[in-house]
Image (cartoon, rainbow, N blue to C red; front, side, top):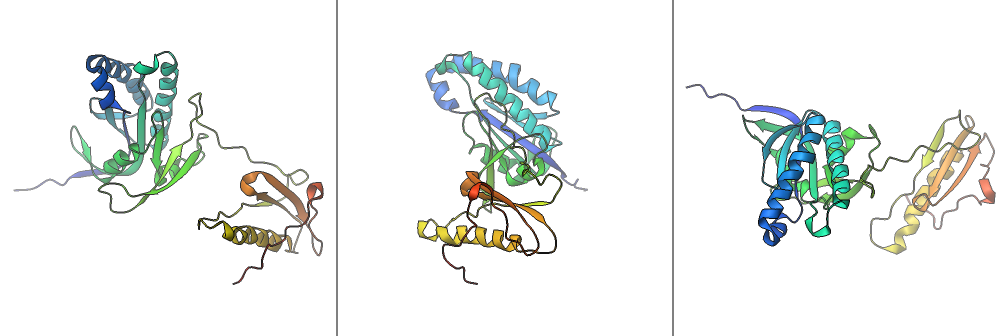
Amino acid sequence: MTTGRMKRRLAAVLILDVAGYSLLMGDDEEGTHARVTAVLREVVEPALVEHDGRIVKKTGDGMLVEFGSVVDAARGAVAIQKAMRKRHVEQPPDRSIAFRIGINLGEIIVETDDIYGDGVNIASRIQGLAEPGGICVSQIVADQIGDKFGLAFLDIGEHELKNIARPLRVFRVKLPENGMPTAAPPMRTIPGFRDRPAIAVLPFTNMSGDSDQEYFADGLTEDIITALASWNDRPRAWCALRAGGQRAAAGVARPHHRPAYRGGDQPPRLRRPLRP
């Protein structure tokens, strides 16, 4: 007897459910069921279909959805949360419904009426990390989306997820109060250097938890700036972003000249010499 091979494919998987569904059902079972059913029919399903999502199955308070593109999945998720926030304003607080959404890109096993595999399991675990009204994605999703349509992501670190062999880095989609994604900030142009190559040196973060080690991070940043400024083959612009972008010093390094600092800033100095 010939055994058919399992059908597999790469897909973007979106999972959503209602935050606090059990509690809502405990307070008002019939009313909650009616409201959730209406929201899924009137808001969620149209947004998913509009963005080419295939609804694989419904789970009472949520859905499992397959997309051919992570961008379509993200757009569908943002559309849902945007519509839900508008709907939330129109509903009494004790009757409002909030979804948590998780998105992952991975290989799935496909059956007629269901999909399985790590791609689905990871999406499910990531969805559990999302805040009510929020969206979480795996690192591969964040990397694939990049800046394709102005989404900004917050890295919430690596997480040990149930039944997943390795820790996974998870990102939260930044959604402001109006429900629209927070666009990545536009690139800044240094005055006077529009047509010249520029290098931005971002500050290193002290991840040791020991505040006494801050000078290592600051020193490394400033040492890189000094090294870049000392290149003497041709003029170049440079920009040093300090302390999370709160202050910036900008100038131009020319052959055998010290960089010119804007606003009277002094050249950066190391707090303590770095050792190799």
